[in-house]
Length: 156
Image (cartoon, rainbow, N blue to C red):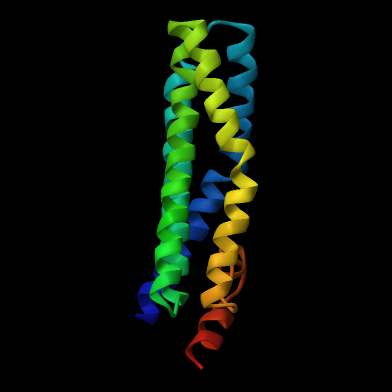
């Protein structure tokens, strides 16, 4: 199992390196261009970005679940994964009505904005539930930045 976690962490590091800043820059440039011109090519770009965000959430779940010592922590991690997938799908769905119907875009944008505004509250509640069962659970970023030290500490 140690080897499996090491491969998962290595894969997550590669994905973060590939998907991090380049896709953020592409997203921002595409969004600005889309606002200036009615470019329909932004929809497939947003599909790729939303699929990447969903996959990143899945990688976070795969990496952290190996450190969970309680079944309730794994359940909360699954809820966080579903939350991430909903965010990714709503990001993609936001761009489709922009070309179909402006009223639908305003409605969809309002729903996506409400979902985004409540993200910090949801994350705070997920963290409270995780710390109620396992206070020493490392974060995804801490696992990726460490070179096996967290895994060795977890095995003790």
